[in-house]
Each structure stands twice: as C-alpha cells, then as structure tokens.
Length: 161
Image (cartoon, rainbow, N blue to C red):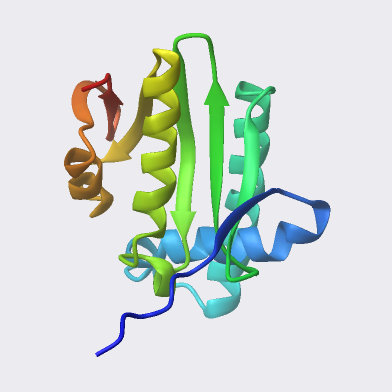
C-alpha cells in the first residue's frame, strides 16, 4: 500500500482578481449560521459577498502591515491566511480553508510553520477562535492555550515549549 502523494502548499499575496474566490471562501465559513436564515440563495450570496468585503477592509485597516495571502494547494486556491507580525507576537488574523481542504493537514502545517518561526525568534503566536469552531481542537493540539475572551471568541496563545 503506497502513501498518498504529498500536497504542495504555497502562499501568495492576495490579488485584486481573488475577490470572487475570497467571497466564496467566506460563504463556506458561514454555512451553518446561514442555514437557519430564510433567505434565497441570491440573498445569502449577496450578504456573504458584502460581509466578506467588509471583513477584508476592516482587517486591512486594523492591521495595515499584515500579510494577506491566498493558500494554494497544488496550484489551486484553497484558502486564505492573514498574519500580522510584531516584535513580540505573530498574530493569526484569519485562517480559512475551503471545506474539501479542511482536516487534510494544510492548516496544521501552516500553523506549525508559524509556531516554528515564533520559536526561532522568541515570539508568541496568537489567534481568536469561536468556542464552537472545530479548529479549537487543532489549536490545542499545537500547544495553544486560552488566555482571554473577546465577545464570542477566545484569545488563544502559543508561548513556546
């Protein structure tokens, strides 16, 4: 029995042409919440498109020096990663993957690289996550611990071995 071929995961900066993909990606992260709203498919799409754009503008306004990347798996857009690096911390602003790429090790690999970077440079890694997000277990497995709350989300931090 042979092992599955390794996937090639690459980050590239977001570009203007990524707008439709990023809107689609955002919509996949809100499917559960929107499933209870009695809207048509067109109304859901319009809502997600506007919220995706607002979210990206807000992130860029709050974190002007952050890296905003599209995650490519085998050359195809699979997600996004937004990271703000400061002297003391690497803050994961957002990490999201299309459903078919979740649970495949892509997010774990990207976060492991950030943790390794932080460890080499004496930094912590922080992120916010909603308590109901399944990624919570991944973050704990990687050594992140809850250190605070902010509304519906929890601040988690990795602070070294």
